Amino acid sequence: MKAVIFDLDGVIVDTAKYHYLAWSNLANELGFTFTEQDNELLKGVSRVRSLEILLEIGNITLSQEDFDKYAAKKNDEYVKLISELTPEDILPGVKDFITRLKKSGYLISLGSASKNAVFILKHLELTPYFDSIVDGTHVSKAKPDPEVFLTAAKNLGIDPKECVVFEDAVAGVEAGKNASMRVIGVGEADVLSNADHVISTFENLSLDVLEA
Ligand code: BG6
Ligand code: MG
Image (cartoon, rainbow, N blue to C red; front, side, top):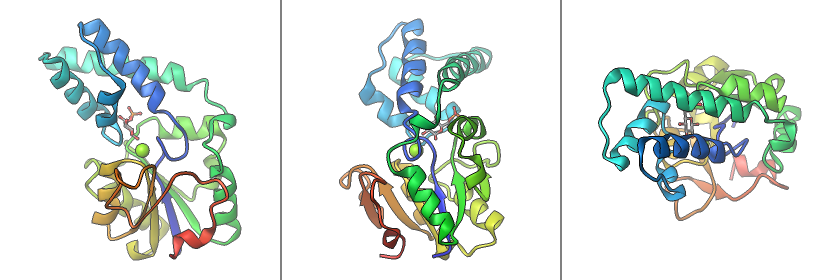
């Protein structure tokens, strides 16, 4: 293995709680309740698709103009919340793991659906660790399409078969497998059953996990 590609939300930082807050406020405004369980459906999913799912749950149809307005409104609130992120919000063990990867000569890329990824990495002070950043502004096809990960491999000049992906979302695990990469799930093994291996935390994680 020569390169490691990290998903952002749910792998490097727990932003799901902020997405949830912003989406549930929007649902309240539209007159229905959006639960934390509903929020699971939005993990790894693009902003536009997330709003479509939310509206399906609320059984609401919007004009294109209103759809765009609400998507922008949700993002404005989300951006306010993530502006408060600091390096302390990096999930346990992640920074140490990335530091060891760099020392051992692995190339590192981000592979995220988020259009706020550059902003978030900056707040976490992690930008300099990445040799490539591929996010929602660079790709047209959402996970489980492999585009985001294949673009990362191409940027790094590495064969996809020599890349390892870390992902917390089912659609993201699929995307990694569709890119012919080794995929390590971050979360629960029964949920991420298609991953090659599943970890629950980066704390004290050996680099051997890349090759196992
Ligand atoms: C993914 C998140 O990383 O990015 C999704 O898991 C989110 O929940 C998606 O909807 C798009 O994010 P953003 O920041 O562009 O709205
Ligand atoms: Mg994720």
